[in-house]
Image 1 (cartoon, one colour):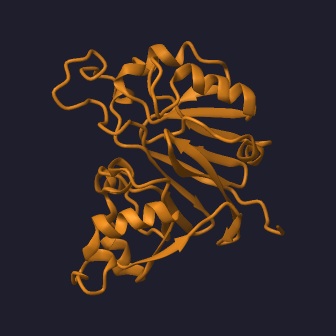
Image 2: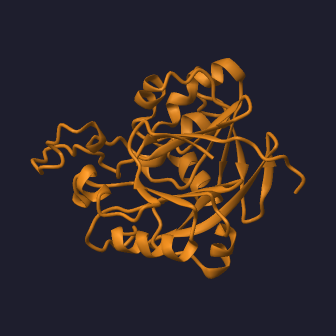
Length: 260
């Protein structure tokens, strides 16, 4: 596609797993840590280029994340899947809708069908609540598309048995909640500058990469740099784990900003 290379800015809005760190009612040492990098909201990123900005997911901490980063405008949301830690902040899109009107959301059909049930007062005209966010759904498949001059490549990965959507924006890819990916989809991850992928914990997990699986995946894909996200307290302290990683692999943390 004939699109000019864009300078992409990424902010890690949250890097925690579904319960965040600290986890409620936990006395785990990581949950009690005073290191700000051990405090993780639910996983999401803000991605911007030129004069536009999108998030990938808007989870249960979305309002807090938008206030922390002083986000004044948003052009849309790319959803990975329908679990609460990735869609629970949908209602808090309202202030952006007040500014621009209909807000585009990009998602697969499974995610849209779930949102229609969970947020009936947003999606069903018969039950539409005055003041609820107004969104326009853009169903995505496996083919790439261009938005605001930037190529976006959807990538199907599996969160356990659930097919979910990862995204490649130019030479940056964001894969969260991954346990398996077909070889044909791996082809979409060649020649990356930056790969973001989940690394939930040390022990294996049925629906997420653990640390070793994430490291093996990075070695296979061979991006220039990789960042791990969707981290639970069972991975360990940020400082200690970071010291054990290869030179081009990093633990992301809330508020981290990178440019690709």
